[in-house]
Image (tube, rainbow, N blue to C red; front, side, top):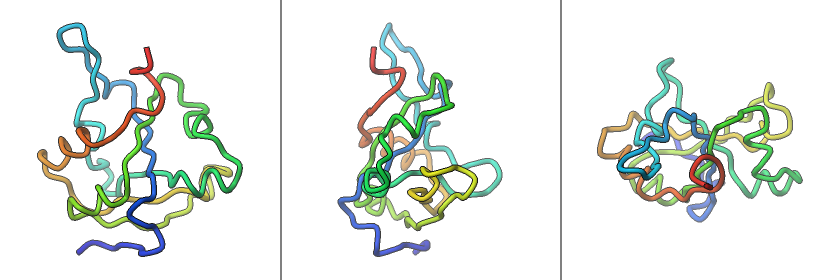
Length: 131
């Protein structure tokens, strides 16, 4: 089992910032590609922000997108992520200002099927699909 922090409850909402190129148009409909959940090329883990910690610090979801024009934002529940065999740990990012205090990472290399499942269970919060 990958590292996992029990202080992040299963009902915690995790926010994932989505690069604009991960939205694809198919038959006139814009949808999210499973590429949005690819493993980082540098071998690090997938970045997320824990909504409750953002809100406790007075940070809205729009601040996660600040400075990232064209990006989107999706939400997943920690329990959904763990249900696929991934662990979640706090990894505060001191270079990311206030929102860095809510930063966490999802650990485990993802199979194509797991990436599709993450895509299918996430909820769109903001960005290109809002139109």
